Length: 430
Image (cartoon, rainbow, N blue to C red; front, side, top):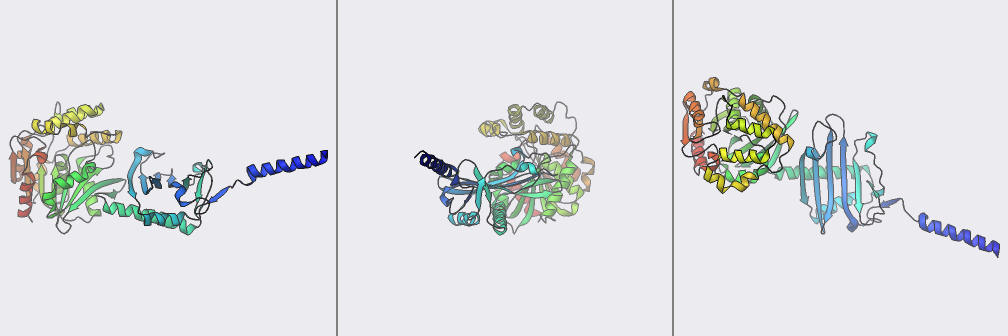
C-alpha cells in the first residue's frame, strides 16, 4: 500500500505539472486561437538610426466597435526620432470591407511571447498584435507568409497615398527639406501662386479657412499657396526662400504663374521674379517692402525680442495689435491670441531665422529689372513696413498701386474689396 501511494503521488504530481504547464501554448494563430473580434490593436513599425534616421508606423485599432487605420512618418537629423519629429500622420475609419482586407492578411499569422529586438541593429519591421485573450505578453506577430507581409505594407502605402491625394495640405520634397502647400480652385484655370507672410506657426493648419477666404479667385484660377520650408537652416535668406519656392514649383510643373506675395511673402515674390523672370506672368505685392532698414526700435525688432524670450502670449498679442486695426483686433481677439497655441521650439527658431532674413533684405535698386505687370496694394496705417514702402515700389516700377486709407498691415484680411481688386488686375493681365 505504501508503494502504491508513492506511485499515485508521483502520477498526481505529474498530472498537476502537465495541467499547469504542459497545456500552455507558446504560439497562437490568428483566426483560430485569436478570433477576429478579440483583436484590439496591431502595430507595424520600421525604424533605423542610420543617417538620415528613418521611422514609419502603421497602426490598426478598434474603438467602440469601429475599426481605424493610423499612420505616421517621422523625419529629422537626430536619433531617436521622437514624436516631435512627426512630419506626416493621419487617421481614417475603415469600412467593414477595408477591415476585412486587413484581417485576411493578418489571418493565419502567429503571436508569441514578445521579445524586444530594436538593439540588434535591424531596421524591422517590428509587428505586434494586441488581443483580449493575451496571456500577458503574447504579442509579437509574424505573418503567415512573405507574400502576406508584403501585401500588408503595400495596402498601407496605398491608403496613405489615397489620403494624401484627398488632403488639402500636400508636400513637395526638396533636397534636404520639405515644403508644404495647398492646392485648390479651378484646375483648368491659369496658375496663381500665393506666398504668405511671416508667422510663428505654419499657415497650413488653417487650410480650410484659406480655401474659403480665397473662394472668389478660386472660381477662375488653379491656386497654390506655399508654406515656408519645414525647418529653416542657419543664415537662411530671402533669396534662399525664393530658390526653394521655385524648386517646389518646378517639382509641380509650374513654369508660368501669376505670383502674389503678402508681407514677407512679397519680399520672396520680388526676389523670385528677379531670379526667374521667365516664369512670372504678373506680380501682386501686398503690404510689403523692397528693403528693410533702421530696424532698431521697430515692430519687427520687438517681435524678435519676444521670440528670443519665448514669450508666446506677448508675441501673439503684439502681432495682433500691430498687424490689424483696433476694431478688427477686438472683434477677433480670442482667435488671434490662441493662434500661437501649440508652438514648439522649431516654430520659434524658424520665426527668428525669418526675421534675420527680413532684416538683411534689399532689392530696391534691382526693381527696374522686373518687366512683368505689377500691382501694389498698401495700407495707410501700416505699422509693420509702413505705407511708404508700397509707394516706393510703385514709383520705382511705374506700376499700378492702390492704398487703403484707414487700414493697417493686415488689410488683406480686412478690406472687403481686396480680392476683387486683385481679380480685376489678373483679368486685365491674362
